[in-house]
Length: 178
Image (cartoon, rainbow, N blue to C red; front, side):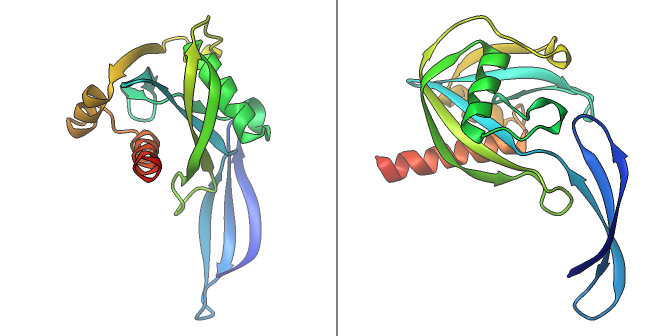
């Protein structure tokens, strides 16, 4: 598929939406809508058999959801993934990690968005004060055993695709390293 044109149709501090003219392999023309967001970092805070989650209201769903700390830099800035991971962890939970290990890469929704995310596991944690952004003022945090977390996924209480996929990456790395 070849891009023949592109125009920005919407922008805010977190994302842009563009509409691209495309030419398909058979020569026919069409359009493709793309949501461009900066890459994000997701952190699995791990302390022995416990993981630390954040819960917040997710406006598009109209629901509060549990998930791993994750996010992008403000104003669509490009920040190195490890630095962003440490920042998101500190911001949302107040935790600081002595060890941060990258587990892999996730594509959020490759059929409609260019956003990609790096997954990290954070260990050797110390607690401190969180530094939440204004939009995160309703956020709550809690520790859960891994068994509890897995039950929450199975029960549909954790539905954030990035959190579920990140946990799968953690399990694969542990199996490989074990």
